[in-house]
Image (cartoon, rainbow, N blue to C red; front, top):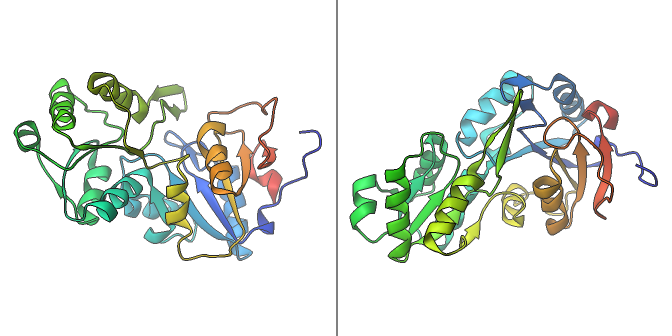
Length: 265
């Protein structure tokens, strides 16, 4: 974009990298971006991956990323499910929670020390929090149990509010569509949204890297680049996912827009 300097991944100590739309699109790996990240890691840049997708665990994603040749440990992955569970655990340790989501969100809640209750318990007992993420097997009964828990005073915690999820052939409904349905039924907004663009997920990712120069790399202005703005970090937009054209008006923290990450090596 006019007036914008050429961004370089190697100018940073750590990259906070999105997954869907940057590393892969649906089941298809975006090889140019993976190659650029591999080169950055070989040059000493630390890679940390931030995903709003709560359906899988951090361990699951770390194994996939390692299979692509990227030097990633479980601690180098922060999902919105992990962030949501950590937020609840920090405020109400060991609390009873009802999860509207998939395996990744339930496991991360369990690993955070929370007591994940089942449908029957949530339908009839007071619980501490309802945690909502993407659930491709959501049912009316699941929503009803969550709604009744919210009416009884449970915290309403959203893993993220992404309305769509990019795929090779278009878009699928995202977690935000489920969050919106519950919000409308309950007549209240979530008490907390853990995933991007919440700065909380960046704080978790950078908690052991004080003073590191960090760059947020993503394919969405409303989540990735907005997260960078709220967290006071630089943002790099890559046109391989949701966003396919440079924005007409660039946010002040946007240091560059690239077709693929190889353009930033």
